[in-house]
Length: 177
Image (cartoon, rainbow, N blue to C red; front, side):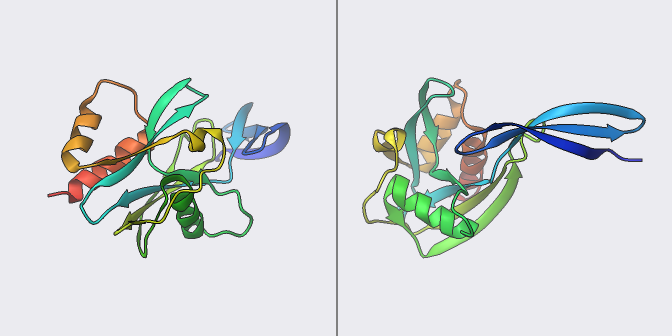
């Protein structure tokens, strides 16, 4: 016998996600779990012709600090494919475009509390066309281009980093010479 969700009750609806209580049964037990239901997200590893990766330094209310991040965004436009979302977010946040895209990985963010799936794309040979930031955090974010050596230095710092960033930069370094 396996576990199964028997009922769902909405607890919160926000702009980006919702929270629902799921009533579960299985193995002779009944229990509930609160789950953040998310439409999914994309994150982009942008690499220019000099072999540098583009990062953002952006303030986040959740941790009340500036964070190092890759361009990313929520899959919040109806019927928009993940790659289209990635292209839109890369242009908005970093002001670059690419014709050379690779799907690297689809990841579960934290399956203990959210159903969010994040898709990681790599964009090579990016070229600058100008950013069009959306919202105050993006408007005041900083753009930086890191060499492989600078990426190694960032990853060696004893500070908490976004797990998606760590994974993507590790993939980047595996391909760096």
